[in-house]
Image 1 (cartoon, rainbow, N blue to C red):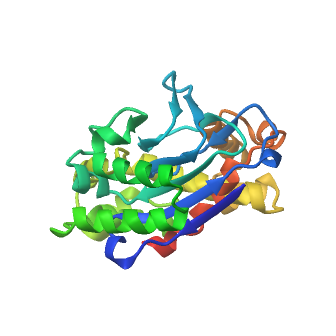
Image 2: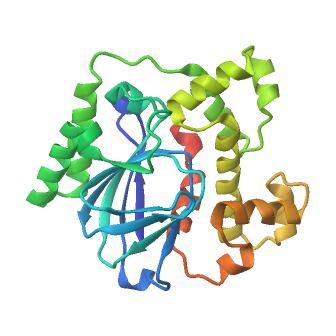
Length: 279
């Protein structure tokens, strides 16, 4: 899999965490399905060629991703059924960006995904026109940047509390004490939860668990550490607690996961180590 991340232009960095592109080859397919693990983000997915099927067994839904979709944050891994040759561009939005650009709160967007043309028709028209013209991914990203800049020309009123919590959670690799954060910043826990849920569709606790899980997956996939060492380094009491958490997110225990030929989680686990640079 050819996966690449691109830091956005300074003018839209308050809206976009990063752009990423990928291309799936024949050699990437080892099983009938792959997994997308949660990362706490809202993403606009633009398919360049091909489609893929997402199946969320937690809420018993499945849908075909074609053309453009807005994918809201999810809490458990979802299965994807993908064909070689699938290529796409993704806009990974920062918390609050969708609300600012569309007027919708992430708390209100409770479906797994939405047709992008329903929420962001101008962005959809731009992307599909450029895809049909055969415009390169790099040029499409440049055009998206100009469009987002023009939509957001009236200025940005960011939620500094949500931003600060995300920044602190990433820095702590998910091991953050929410009560201590609130005490240190001088805010009530209910205020943090209300603001955070509005901007992300998640609770602070859910987000911190997701970030810790991403760092856990990074170590599990890329390091030679034992499960016991990974458990301790990830802030778990012991290996059994780590395995329980791993299984709750993935639907597979570490041994079962290891026996599969998944590729997409590698992309996600690589991405989490870049997050600090985006905040």
